Length: 618
Ligand code: FES
Image 1 (cartoon, rainbow, N blue to C red):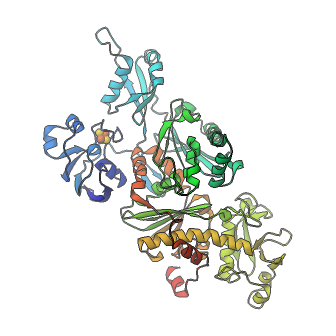
Image 2: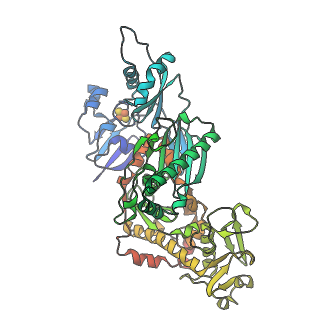
Image 3: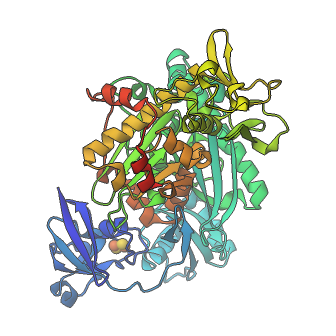
């Protein structure tokens, strides 16, 4: 059950599941309430005045608030769960946190989970024999950080304190004291944001003081030789005795090598990377953590864990600061993973206060779809197959040098080739979408996906185009390149694309039907992922991959997953909001839905919007 909570004087209204704390509900609504402890009830800074829906008084309230304040309805918002419709008066922030523009045009307050606290401690005397650790912990407590110390801190502390005249910097990650450094090192604090894709891994070293990205690089996932998709990776762990260990080692090695490159490029020291936030699909994160992914790949598709986890990064072999922590974001389901949660975080979908309906599609082998607004949001996954990645396409290839990435057809064919290579050597996903969309647009491919025969085209199309309609071993094809390069688009290629886009479009249709909306209600369509960034929005619409909305409403949001990981790294409030996304989004499983097959069959055709429809939306 959800209850409405209103924050005054900002007049921000949000709805939160019963039991959500007022502090977390504010984070979800994008409203910052003062805190240094991250909502753990130990800093005493997060007080709000409950004007309606007041809670009973807790021990933490008594510790930090005066009797008068308690009588007046003031409570620590992080200790105040919502059990009824509530109104909270929020005091102005004592300090205005630095903000950075991140994700999809979002201003994010920089308030990382990693805190470096400079301490000037008094030296022990015969009158003051407080042990070293207790001295550090007490000093941190005064600053609003209640911590547990990592064993590595106990061992290093005696020398560290005495060699540095009792002037040290405590490194706190969450509620754990992971290190104590000599002198004032507050200006050196970095984190690692990781987006672990089945094909590519993207890493960014981020300055936790400023939000600036010190270096960003991508590399191929070292698991690639063990299969192109999550199903084949899972199969490998099932068929090989040491398959899981092998795949975990591969991804850890990939990240360590990527980090070496990032450190070299940025000049940042390894010892100053205190935390990593990793996102990725459910299978990738299971493999990273060394968890058997087999149950994800077979019905009823059950992941071992769905919540965010935090563990010492060294436990799985990551080479950051020796006591650095690794955190993940939660999954929404077996096939809608933490990468999509991160994308939702980066775009603000489901949290926008204006209730605009938005559709988020991460197009790939598995199409992940999120649809909704702050009112209600649904998510699903549609198995699109490998066509978008250029696989199972006669001249298909990955998006690399020499790939046709764009196609335009007027009185002849014009090609856009990656890296402006002199001659094309194949066609990648965005080129495939463009080529088919252009053929549909000019009428050489009909709504059912059939490519015209030369005899039917002659007289209706110019010779240059008719001469490109060929037949190879009885299979119709369209010659995209010059004859000597022989890059063709075959009838089966068009069918493969229809299946891929049909699955994704059917997923969108199911979610739209569940929300009772049509394309006209969509405020924006967000295309995420590397494929989504390169695809031509008009072409995506022409083939029916996205609903028929005005083309300016179709926006490429780039690597939204990586942006979400950065945001989670830079703001514990945003991370908290991300961790709660599964509570706010309903996962819809397509495979159990009887109507899905009919919707899918219908979605195979290319859209035939009437001229009137096109005029009103173009
Ligand atoms: S006591 Fe620190 S956020 Fe509530």
